[in-house]
Length: 138
Figure 1: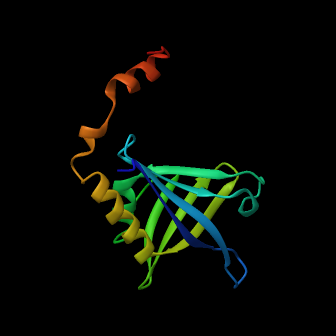
Figure 2: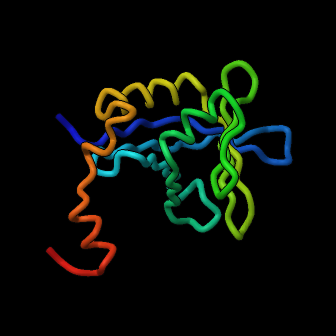
């Protein structure tokens, strides 16, 4: 069984103009980092012209689809009947994207099949994490 799940989604960038630009994004979940979700935007979709990835907790994404969640660099909230807004805060500014809530729920179901909620600790490699933290090699 694969230890990584990837799912492409269409995100709609919220801008001051009435038209929202659609851009591709990829959600990723890796069983070896069971608490984290990554959302990557390809180089053509970013101001810097390089791929940009944001990492946030699976718990934050789950909570943010139903109610306002997050106080740091990533904030998530429901928007209308079928959208979820993800806000990414950086020194350069704030990016806000809308994603279909159904796409996020489908992605989360797949992550929960790989690593059930509450069982994340069983998939942690604490020896490797400690070694990385201390700057050593195994």
